[in-house]
Length: 417
Ligand SMILES: [Zn+2]
Image 1 (cartoon, rainbow, N blue to C red):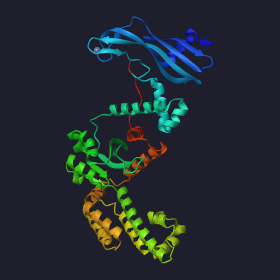
Image 2 (spheres, rainbow, N blue to C red; image 1 turned 90 degrees about the horizontal axis):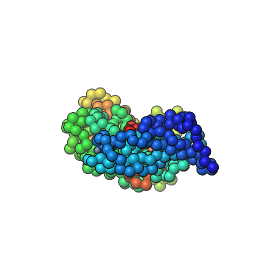
Image 3 (cartoon, rainbow, N blue to C red; image 1 turned 45 degrees about the vertical axis):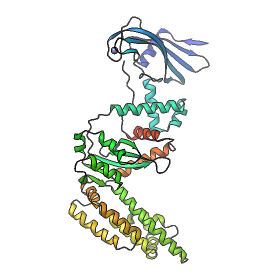
């Protein structure tokens, strides 16, 4: 048995749905047993049809029935149904005329898409699909369209002053996506495959000359491809490229880890297991080690003298990021490099060479004030997107998710009629 609403209730539906003239709700049908409400919408006959491209008055071509999933009415799945005319323009051919409740080509109303987009901000595609009773690819489609919409709405004359460039791996190791962030607005502005010079070229080539000149700092790791691309496109790049603190801290930690492993092995072969389980200590700053553990850590440093030396060098390096003057910063870092070169720890000596070669960009980071952890926070936000989606099957999906969550885009549909 089917239930139909009375006139007054149809008007109520029309109000709730925001259906405007020349469209009106002509029937609302609840089919018992299906838990589905179908709202039939009709266009008043004889109302002029206009070409959606040029707005010129057209003749009708034909009429096609279309359906859109809408927000549920109470617990009932709600479907809008309408016969939508197609208009024939002498210049632009046959086009379906737009409707006020949905974007062209979508099987969902704009309000429904908004809801899915809101859910997607909180949960992954699979969870949202289950929650909304949709297929995985339907939700993925809404997400992809949202990103496309958001990107197309972005102003291409926007000025971005402080950029951060990083690479992130996705699922398979050694496969990368290049990420360009706008540090001022804390959002991702550009993504490209791989981490080659050409990956970053694409970003710079999308900028006007004015936009290029306005870039005041470009912070990155020491990856040559990123340095080269920036030098190629940005005027006076050598005073703007900054090697950020986050990546340099990581290089120090990696070097310490090498020293620790070698020393641990040597001690173990002498039957000394003092360094077992000590790895975490060396990753911390002294201030992070709890007071209770100070005696242990001190005793450890007296035994693991090489690792302790490497650690002390890292501690000192981490105190050299707050200079204001280029001259003083340079002096202090050169002193540290001297200490590193004389440390007799191969991993640290090697790191000193790398840093010496790139010292200019570290000094830039210090005097430009770009060493404030923004790269680190964006990197961890991307890792969060990655882990909440349980990895990505391909790079396009990964890129899409980053834009969706971190692009600060205007994602919602706004149909026009
Ligand atoms: Zn036209």
